[in-house]
Length: 188
Image (tube, rainbow, N blue to C red; front, side):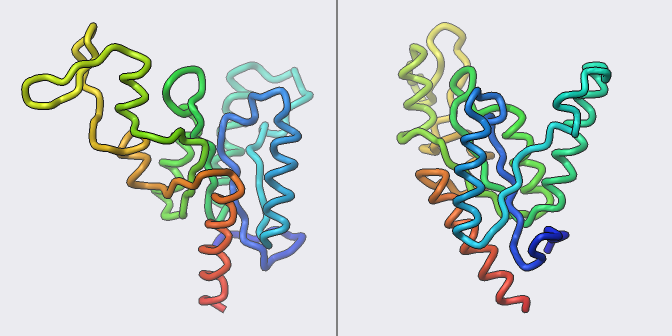
């Protein structure tokens, strides 16, 4: 288990990954997620701004490094991750969130995702871009000829094989809370 919150050392910590930090209503989003966490007996941990939100004396490079370092630390200290994998600026999830999912997975932390549209990745790509199946059944973008992963997964297989996908943020938090609290009781 990770380092616990000084407020309540028994509560598992959950890093709240996602592009939500970029949204105008990010404070309300994280407020709702953290309230849900409290109800479930876990501590929600939003991404870090590196402690520089109002300090403009840092260069962009310094700010970027501090944000990166802060979020890496928070993921390392968390017991698990809930990740919003909603399409962001295109057909795919936010690349920063995908990195955080991969990092948490590499550390052996459970990750539960939400924000994934129903249907398969291939169905969504082919709805947005003209696609055809070749003679062997491989789906390809018509213009570029690039293969579209057609394995019946809701996202790229590296995400669907490393995470569980819940239908909502609340369902993801409840599922992860169940795992973490069960693990906590088992190790007590």
